[in-house]
Image (cartoon, rainbow, N blue to C red; front, side, top):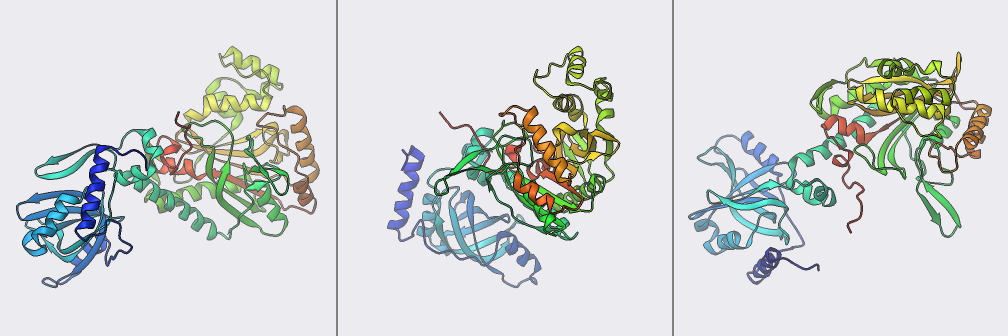
Length: 501
């Protein structure tokens, strides 16, 4: 065991004292008849004068001794309940065991009859109790002190990095953090319910892939020892999900982990949860309509409203969302009309004239993407679809018939960040092969935009792929938005952190 501090040593001594008194501090069984919330509801529903017995369990959150009476609060996953112990009923020695050897943070079991105190608080009149798990380490807090005879904890765990490194402690002392992750679970449940109700089926595709693809990102590489083969942690589900359209599954979706070996920021984590779906016989405009309907439905189910507060602003998620074409959005906010700059050199010159210094090796599409992220994205507070993107940064999207250099793609934005990305998917195998070859030729080997050739995917396309619309959205970012959290680390239980020195 790691070196113990003074408080931890004292608590271990208390655990041993409990054993000596015949109470095991880590027993093998527990008994519960009601959660704290169920106990309260049962008491309120019972006819007056009808005794309601209950056995509850949970963490001790407060202990207060007043003469022969000791009050405490126990907290479980549903709420809190006050415990009421009288030394002349439970026994003076046993109550002394409670007050002297039980600490805040310990898990306990208490049984008795519910009643209402003179102050009106429904409480459990305890006739017996036991220890379920002794907390050797005190839970993180600013300080533990006695207020009006009650031992209470103040200033719960606040340091962000410490909270992320010890999420278990963060959850234990910060109820609002527990609620964020309950909301996240409701978000995922609501997404599934929405898509299931519309004829989509949920599938699972490989996490370890021989060829990565479906997005512009650098992969993590691993190695299969027996097969003597390098493999990649997937960066996207896309190419496997679209193979299923070839096989006759017309509406498919997957919710799962993607892995991208890229930067960490307030909206990026190397491991994140993604939703992707693909609809046969749909284009990007139909996907737009489904997207705004889905996000509004998920908001209603997860948090009870489509009107949310984020970073001091009120955002309305109900349809219809604003729609702006990429060219107009950039021109309005940067003063640069990308249509008048047909080459990367011309566009770079215009950007430099505005004080924007792009990377020298950038293609025209990546320059346009830089304008979007610099000038447009931060301004998109209300939900907005930006549509029609450059072909050279969208190798899997279908070109617009009237503009071969532009593809039918949209991104959805809200609160100044990207939420989703979608295409009318390219289903011409010859065009797709040419795109892969073009990407390999025009991008350096270490460029994140470079898309490797996937011969098996092309083979699937040659069997015939129905026209379809595809969509991808980060569940983490959607949860950030719906819970008002400023960083992705607040909505991932165990975010990636730099190793401690």
